[in-house]
Image 1 (tube, rainbow, N blue to C red):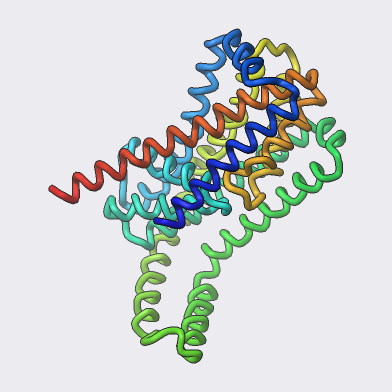
Image 2 (tube, rainbow, N blue to C red):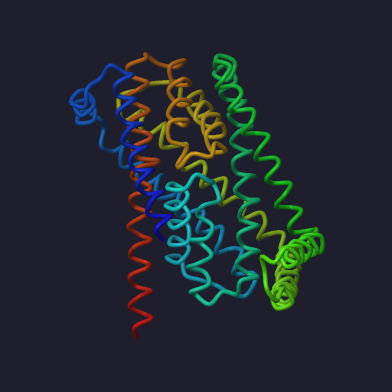
Length: 340
C-alpha cells in the first residue's frame, strides 16, 4: 500500500511537471488556455467526456464477456469497477500491467476463482493488444504522412510500440496454449529457491500450483470453445481504444478545428502506440511529446498545444480522476459489506 502511495505521489508530481512544461513550451499562459477553453463548444466537450467514459466501460464489458462464459456472470457496474481499477493503477505505476492486480482483487472479492481471474486477464490482454495493433495499422493508413514527418525519436517509439505489442500478444497466446511449460518452469524456479535456502516447504506451493493449473486448464478449455466470446472481447477492446482516440477529434472540434478529422485520428493512433509501451506512469511526457509532434503537422503550432492540452485533460487526467473515485467507492462499499 505504501508503494502504491509513493507511485501516486510520483505520478502527481510528474503530471504537474508535464502540464507546466507543455504550457511553457507552447508560449501560452494558463489564462490563455483558460480563455480558449471558455470559448470551446460545450457539446463537443460533452461528447469527449462520454467517449472518456466509454474507454472505461468497454474494457469492463470485455472482462464481463470472459468471466460469463466461465460461469461467473457479473453486473455491468462491476465491470466498470474492474476497468476503473485497472485504469487508475496503470496510471500511477510504471508498468502497463500495473492495473491487473486491481482487477484481480475486485474479481476475487466477487467470488471469482483465481484460475478464472487469470484466464480473464490473459484473454483480455490479448484483446487489449489486438485493439492497439488494429488502431496502429489504422494509424499507418490514415496518418502515414504524419509518420513519415515524425523525427527519428518519434518513428523509433512508434516502431518499438508495434514490436512490443506483437511480442506481448505472442507471449499471452503461449500462456494459453503452453500451460505445461509454464507450470514446469514455475516448479523448477521454486525448487531452485528451495535449494539456495530462500524458500521453505516448496511442496506445499507445488500442490497449490498444480491445483490452480488444473482449474486454469479447465477455464482455458472453456474459453477456447467460445469463438464468439473471443470476437466480442476483441471488439470491446477495439471500441475501448476507439473511444480514447476519438477524444482528440472531439477536443479539436470543440476548439473550433475544421477538417483533418481522419488524419488527426490516425496521428493519435500512432501516438498511442508509441507511448503505451514506455514504462512511465500514464506515459506522461512521452504521450504529450508524440501528440504535439504529430498535431503540428496538421494545424498551427499554438493551436496544436491547445488541442493536446484539452484532449489529454479529458482522455487521461479526467479519466484517472473518475477511475480513482470509482475505485475508492468500490473499496468503501466492500469494507461496509465485510463489516456486515
